[in-house]
Figure 1 (cartoon, helix red, strand yellow):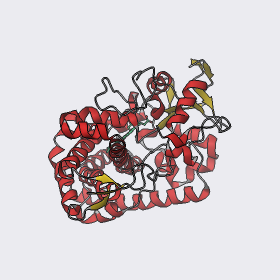
Figure 2: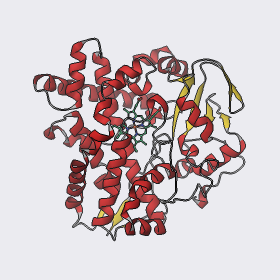
Figure 3: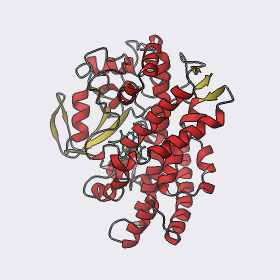
Length: 410
Ligand code: HEM
């Protein structure tokens, strides 16, 4: 735990965009779990911080996304004309049954454990090429120069984005994120989100034309064919879900690698243990996910009146935010020093990929990408040191937790 981040009594219990919260949310979570585990924010959102309620909300069919009604309640009916919000309304991530199963069913096969395991050699190749490119420099930003390239390249492969279109994605800025935060967006942020959505729509429409003319062994081709069938997928759903796939696996995985490397370097005993025993890597990845998850929370709406959730009555239509990062450190599930990084911890089952029907489609892909990236880095740059492990800069978003940069030298 970071000693400079202890909350004071006068601070609001949950203020997720405050700089001290962004820097180290965990003492704030401890206080929420201990004093007000079903906290109601000034915006009227119920914040669940204990593992039991977070886990239940994710899996219980009485909760859903209720995306359109929930968004209109917060911003007013005109919001659904904004391109970014309209597009998100078609994401499987925001869909309830039965649309959810239809949308997820169209792509789920590409993400099975077996299909993803087959991608391991390609993942290894991308990581090796990334290190080859910088190894003589003696210095890099682990986020920009190392972690960023891998997930972008792999999702471009999966979507069949041609090599000569990729540079714009590789150099693109990572400015998503605020869209997911539980604090309303300003008009300027809505405009920026709209611009991003419209640009992405424009690009992917060209890609759809290309894949109609030149089908490939990729997800875009599969989805374009499902759209042509007419009954399975509308054109708007096609575009929106490609944008989702492109975005969802991207910053989250960069941040798993970045947060994991930071945690390791802040705990030199664990770093030494992992270097000496690379076979601990699979468990170490689960522990990185638990210890400092790159997704900190997700929400659900009560689809009916709920008599008792953690001692609270939840009326139909109310939003419950599940703090995944807090559940991951709940001492009732992790009784042995939950605030410590312990790569040998038994039974680590973090909620970082969610649970229930929306359980992360890319979980296995993210795990393998992080495993290959961190294993290879430790092997090929064994003397690498972080320039500023104590006070790195965090991105100013809450739901997506990650570093702006992580300079390192060797
Ligand atoms: C460390 C990396 C990742 C983390 C922590 C993460 C986390 C999550 C979480 C928490 C959810 C569920 C949200 C909810 O229940 O509301 C989710 C859903 C999803 N994730 Fe990931 N994710 C990661 C990587 C990926 C990757 C690599 C991909 C794909 C390339 C991906 C694609 C998706 C999709 C499509 C969904 C929506 C699934 C559905 O609604 O059925 N994610 N992810």
